[in-house]
Length: 416
Image (cartoon, rainbow, N blue to C red; front, side, top):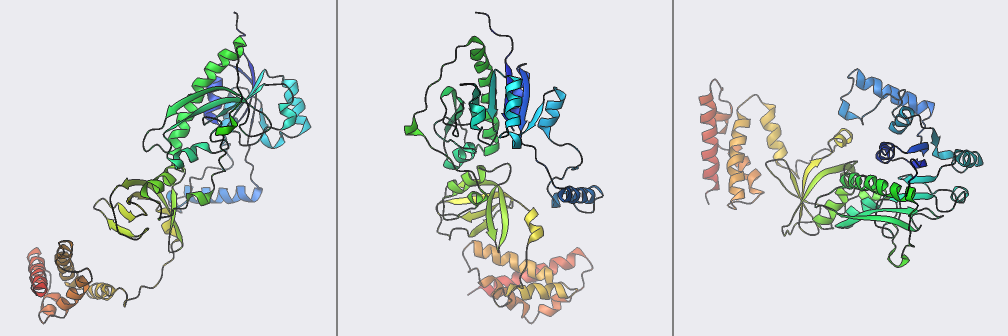
């Protein structure tokens, strides 16, 4: 059987990888319809001002998002279309009769849809029977909707896939043409799963084009019994509930990564958890309470079940933190710190040596946590304290003498 050399395709997509895959297959793409984000003149000038401030190093670059010059065309799909002489259409106009007539005039053999985000209007679907094909990143009829991969990660599923199906008047309900299953690796995040889905769709495109050219296309109705529809992933879905298990919280973080991470609040300031790890260990700590900060500066937090290790936290939010006056009554060590910093003396050396001894004793369960401040205060009140606190530091040996006195004095005060 002699196949048709090329198929005339019209594309509805905001997915650059998908469009690139079609171009690489050397098919005749006669038009692309995608979202064109337009900004008001005010927002253009605002972005220009921010871009200018960063360029002259008035602010650190990481104080802002990565701002690109708003006067330069940063739309990669438009660049790709221009490079390959493909006409680009604005998705805002797809419901107009003018757009419909232009589509009829273009006379595509098929319309391919992927990652478009809007429902194809009825007046376009009715142009020709079974000629619009959508590529969806899930095993339909499961996970219908716009963000299935986020929910697949959030639910902790280990198997997913991609589907090619005809488009009807509802989201992702048309007859299935082709499917491909694949497993999800442990610790796979949303971005990685998106790339994996795009790859399998690119392979599916090649197989589907062969079937279309040979006119051997078979489709089947979806089994509504197993259907599920996923709501759009909102910002509230990224908020962490520390009463959940560490595994569930990790999945929340991974369902947004790498665009963002799980969001938590500290004194009404939002922090983004970029990299986390589940630690399967029983704990009796209050959910959301910081248990420990280890030697690598990882933060261990108690959860409803097990512990979450936070490896990377968004530091940009530190620029927006609000601060409150510290209560010396509630935190008595503050007065000791103030005293050690107020005078140009050897007090920091004494305080550091005493603190090291007491922390070691606390970790070995020889004293209580609150005993640390109490005993340091006793060292500060010792009759020999002023002698060593005011001693001039002319050599390293002077520091050793002061350090040694503070350690021995601290140990003697712990003997009961």
